Image: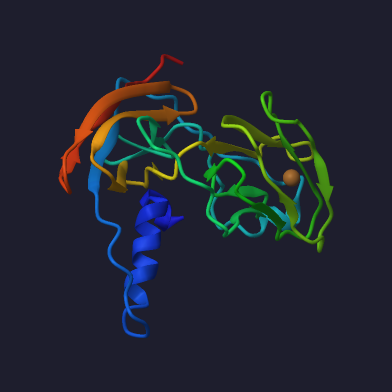
Length: 241
Ligand SMILES: [Cu+2]
């Protein structure tokens, strides 16, 4: 998903911009911006090709084998699928009314890592011609698993507490993903180039956390004055394998 490195606030800003021609524009959200890159040092584990031959309707959707994604790297030692978010200092915000979508497509979870807000509607789709049994392994929130045969309507759900929730499929053992349920609207997922962007930050002192599913978390303090833009980079040490 190419847009994953945009923050929710950035997407909202884009939505506003695109409406300028048709309606009186709202005042810009303003505030500060934090952008940066997430990289690694050391030698990360090699991702492995996934054998989907047991599920031919999925296998035939992929010209080349799908790779595992728990450490997804890019040129220049960048790390994809890292969630960067404000973990302290945010004044809090209510969840947006639009649902976030999670797809099961080609026996993969799209996106691999899905950030969403507490109480935000989550819609889970099965786009495949086979059954999935999605099983988010929540510990703080209620745990459940649901079967979703081909052609089923989306599962509508939400989470009421912040939590990093691993997601698996009880039918296809290679399917792995994450729901990252956050108390803040200021978050971003790194794209293929490891970059992230948090926008619309009011002046203040913040703790910024970067989370990678294998390498854990890192935090940095950042102070925003006015509408300034700050650059913050994170570097994870690749764990031995
Ligand atoms: Cu499945």
